[in-house]
Amino acid sequence: MVLITLVSSDEQNFPVERELLKQSGTIETLIVNMNLDDEDTDAAAMPIPLPNVKGDVLEKVIQWMEHHKGDPVKEGDNEDNNAEIVVPQWDDDFFKPAMYGSKHLELTVAASYLDIKNLLTLSCKAISNTFKGKTGPQIREEWGVPNEFTPEEEEAIRKENEWSE
Amino acid sequence: MSSELNLAELPVDVLLNIFGQTDQEKTKQKSIRTTLRLVCRRFNSIIIDPSNQRRLSAIRMKIEMISIAQIDSFWEIRVFLGATDAQTANREMFDYPPEIPPLKRRGDTLMRWGSEELTNCRKKISCEGNAEFFEIISQFEPRRLELDRIDLTRSLIFSLIDCLRGYPRIQCINLKVLDLGERAKVLNTSFAKDIDAGTMAKFASNFHSLIHIPKEFVNSEFMEKWTNGSDTGGFDFVKPVEEYEQHTRIPLRNFNRFWIFESTKLFTTLAEYLCC
Image 1: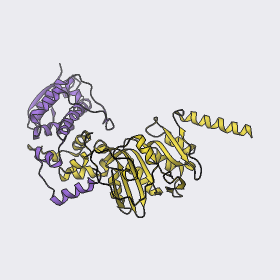
Image 2 (image 1 turned 180 degrees about the vertical axis):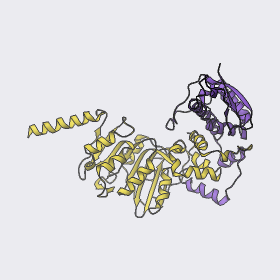
Image 3 (image 1 turned 90 degrees about the vertical axis):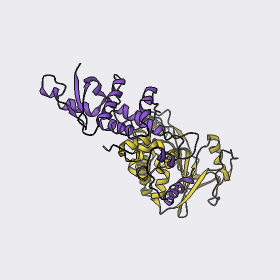
């Protein structure tokens, strides 16, 4: 089993199975471009630094990739794909403990940075699911977003659209 | 990365991904777009940014139809949240003068269909406020778009194309050339002289069906551009109309490939030539 070492921003080392890393577009491109796959070169032993991902977040990402090992990897942006996405139970349980906190958001940003499309999609879907049936101020309160609007600004946005609602 | 990352601070791409996956609750008519705009300034600015509209398609309110009319110096935009085909068909039997008073929301009550119950909501804005006009129509994803009593200019058509770009295809455009309500064959929507078949085809390629499109535009160049657009196939029909003549409907189901259409035209021309 080929292992490749990922180094988080806080300099923690994570040896990860080569096969798992195929889920990450960013790392896969790096491996291919730097010949890290070639066991006969020194490059193979070179760790991959990930300066934008902290150790605890990278650990969660690896945990997620391990569970989804062998899943088909999404290609392209699929922006026009209108199929409804359902977060599977395992993923829902995986995201839930950190939901509404910065940890889940950091995991989502890491998925975007590492270009792990399936993780990004499910993570974003899990966030958007928390908006269901809520008002703007309720979403703001639940996610701890500071209220920057003056009452007049808020009223103006409401008024702009109330004719059609 | 900050240790206390906030939802409002996520990168734009990630936020667009989140917004794009937000379910438009089918049971509620309240727009999720407005809800999200009210969360914070950053959400608001991302959502109203025209360059993000393609990725925000999911949070547009799905509606039956938008009808845009030009009345004096105002755009009148009517939004039909839901209507059955039968209701919409009946609608054409009624006359609806521009001075219909604004309608109040009627909740879930099913109203009798008539001239005063034509639409769920309407808004009048000055024709000078084009930005507001496009902001309003970009909130919705209508099944049909109706342009009524509009002086269509080339610049307006290109602005509409810009506004429609990136939308999932709207099923149908009705140019409302004829006022069927008054049973008079009077041109309602007019077309500036600088609008040619190519411009109309570019505009038409946002739609599967075209109703009341002037016959002069429906030539082979138009058909080729329309049917060879980025979203090929699935065209329903074109109903061209000529002033003071009966309109005709051309179903395209039998003309899935343009070359068949062209061949049919060639044989028709040959037959006409031989008959002469």
